[in-house]
Image 1 (spheres, rainbow, N blue to C red):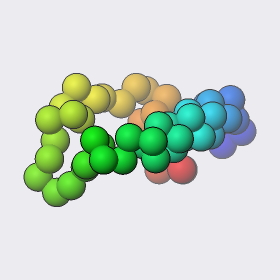
Image 2: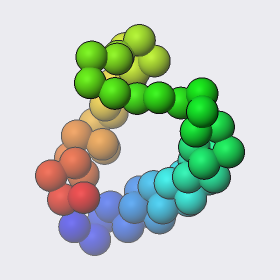
Image 3: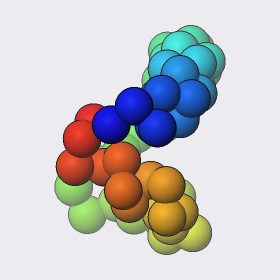
Length: 55
C-alpha cells in the first residue's frame, strides 16, 4: 500500500534505533513466554492496525 510509505520508513528508523538499545541492554531485556509486564501498556493505533497484515 503506497500510502503507508512514510509509516514504513518510520518503522525502519525505529527498528534500527531499538536494535542498538536491545543489544546494549540484552542482559536486562528478557522477553520470554509468560512475561508480559513490560508490554501491558502497549496498544495499536489505527495506522498500525491497517499496516500490520502487510508488514
